Image (tube, rainbow, N blue to C red; front, side, top):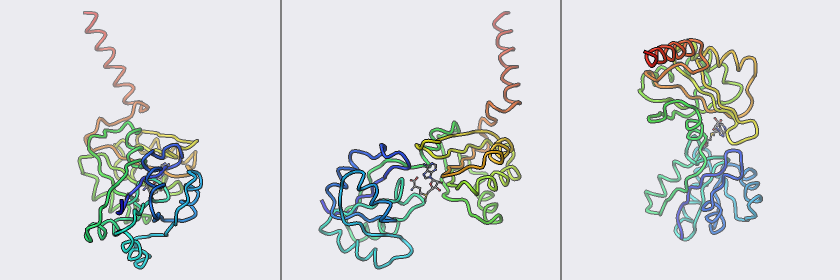
Length: 250
Ligand code: SAM
């Protein structure tokens, strides 16, 4: 039926497309996407052929008008290049205006790098603040980190390979005792997720310059702190085990 369908797509592994996503793409009248080449590849892989319309919240007022005009009698699917639309991706303005005009809007959940990264990080996941991309410039990045640093939640950011070590250096400076996790290339061949203190992760990624896409996470201020790789933690755990076994022996 007509309306706007917000559809999540894979963030690397094409097997992560959902059954409902395939069904909705097969039945829709048109697909609004960021990059027609990227979405074209996914459609080809799925064996589905539909008109693709480029859409971007900022660049293209006319594109939005044109899509809105078709919602009365067409099912239009909104996708991003990868993952969940609107999550550091276009769609917010389109969704807001579609809803204001009274069109049905629904979302088909699926892959989202922030959620997958948090889930695999080992950091406390009960409360989190997703804050999108960290700013590129040093001062803006520090300002943003300072703004959210005392939030009692895990902080989740999107990051890119070339910028990771700069961000870790800032974390080492601003919050050296906070546990940090880096999830890279999630669902792809070289997926990895490392957790530790800023110093350790900075040393590692300076030695192994990271490629690809990254989710950077910072544990809460009062978190359980310190990864098991940290010597202090290992020592503390060893002492605790000794005490426990002594107590058991008595
Ligand atoms: N809407 C997308 C989502 O739901 O995940 C995010 C789009 S945002 C423009 C792209 C950023 O998401 C990348 O720079 C990276 O930080 C993160 N990202 C996307 N795919 C990823 C992956 N496979 N592994 C790690 N991070 C990823």
